[in-house]
Image 1: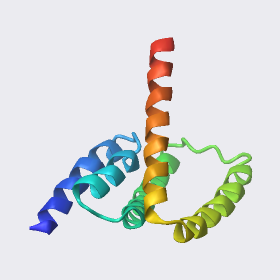
Image 2: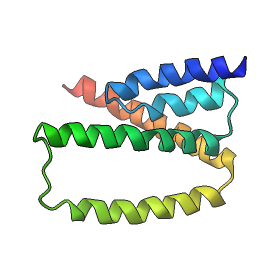
Image 3: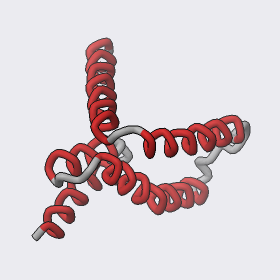
Image 4: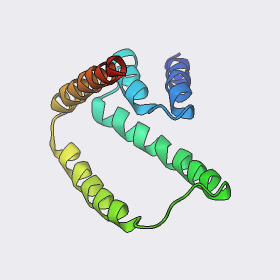
Length: 120
């Protein structure tokens, strides 16, 4: 029965991800709050599912000539180093702190989005 719950949660999180709206901001809270999954596992599952989706998106953008590669290393190298650092930090921190930090991030993002929308 739990399989069907995760299947439905994956489907609900996959809809915004497929539309390019940041499926992780939906998938992670769904897995934690509804699925009862530990925060670290939910984040890991989200990152793991991102890998094949990003590969297909990269291929599609390349085929359509939408990639700008000039100066790309100024983005890739810091992202790579901070991602590795984030992995070690997340492994060290307790899940409860990660859960609260992610909640605070979502609240801040919601406030910023609301402010930007009202501003015009």
